[in-house]
Length: 369
Image 1: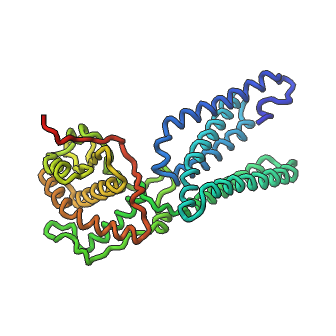
Image 2 (image 1 turned 45 degrees about the vertical axis):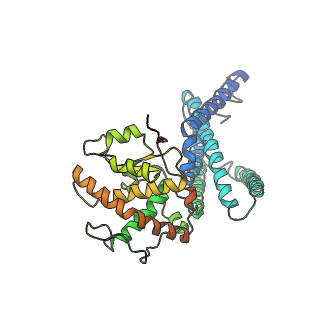
Image 3 (image 1 turned 180 degrees about the vertical axis):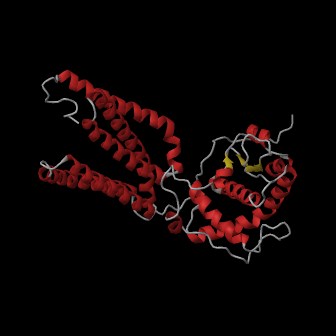
């Protein structure tokens, strides 16, 4: 990087080299602030993917800075600025997700301060080993060709990515996010479907019938770790969670029965399928402002149950939607009771459910003016 910045060159000046590095560092700071403003509220929903994103983006940043010495001089400054921005994004994402991962290990019986101290010590040791190895490599490869050095760099980068992917697969988080609850419920509903619980004339689930729930260790091997890799639409793709009450009114069919549940039975959410002419077809969920994590789990379960039942029909008219909703309402109670018991037996903590949400909530008053 210093060579690309013309440090030591005959036409270089101290001020020109300093300006290059000031601009690079400034671009990194600006990227850090912007990335924090745009993404800070999303880290908690997908800790593993964001942590892996941090490892990938820092590799991209380092590659851009190294490759900047090979491009024309006019492109050098933009490339090192992009590299600095990528590394700044890594710092934000890794720092935010690192705390959540440390809390996960602390819940296994260790002290959070002890884990934090050992984590810093581990970084120090790996940094020292990296310095030693880099010195050995620099001495051994100083006379080697550029092609050989790029091959070794590419191999080590691929090894770094592979190691981090395997590390994320070992992280068995026991709380539900959007991906994990979708994997668990898709498997759960498919097993229930074999007993024909979703047929129009079937009876609600018998409490004596137990359907097992995937454990955190099983889901850890199945959940996606990259943001851009989605092979097909999942059940959660059709759920719009945490919408405003106004949006719910505009997009869905009659809310009379649902409002009665909120007022009479103190229900903390409303789940409704959209009308055919709605801007976005799917299942809408509106939450009460004081909804707990358990309430959110119930709401998401209810929404995915309704989505699963609607997908059994090729074309659904508004009248059929109301019929399916009524059937889902009947099945929901006993199904969720069974699911709750099986989830706890499998090792899930439903009190920490945190799924992607639009962030709206509604309140109501029983007072009559």
